[in-house]
Image 1 (cartoon, rainbow, N blue to C red):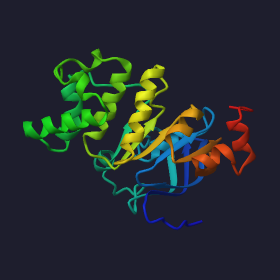
Image 2: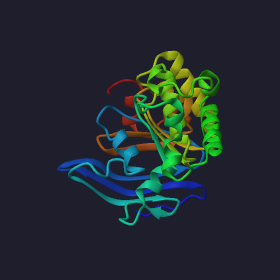
Image 3: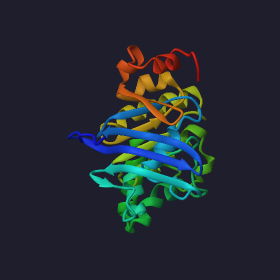
Image 4: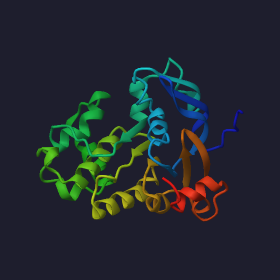
Length: 257
């Protein structure tokens, strides 16, 4: 069924199906994602959460045996079309993974990696991008005096914030986060959650999380996936207080998963 595109919808996923070989991983997913909101995706392991998020910037397009049908409309353009520019798409739809994965380079070179690929060469412009991006993730004051130091020398929480800064450096519209705090200690997790609250003023954020309390804390909307199906998508408060589907209620209350 074709869905009406809401006024401020940045992604409109319509009847998306995805197979890895014979594994039917995503089934008839229809999913609007609104600008400058945080959408959390919850569900048990293997339910399709990460697979879904990776389709939004086609990060999984090169997986052998993958097949997709339906539409993923980003700003009105179907990115499943062969004519899509992947480099441009990933500039606009950034991704942060489960564990901070800085490049084995300096802090400065990590942040400027994307802008340099996209043609920014002037030192003054790059310096400004580094400062702005690191300030956006509350890391500038911690590293401003050692920008030439190896990024791999940072703590785990700092590395994850650096990876978020690296994603922000290309000025994306959307930030995808695949369990961004699962490898972090509680203090670093709080910093990332506070950061998400700040970033949503400028960016659209989609976060996969296995932590339901985190979903309740940081998101405006929550989607519950189960065995490749989107069971329910609604306001986060409603999902956690009065879900429409008993399977959602059972998962949130800990009866399975």
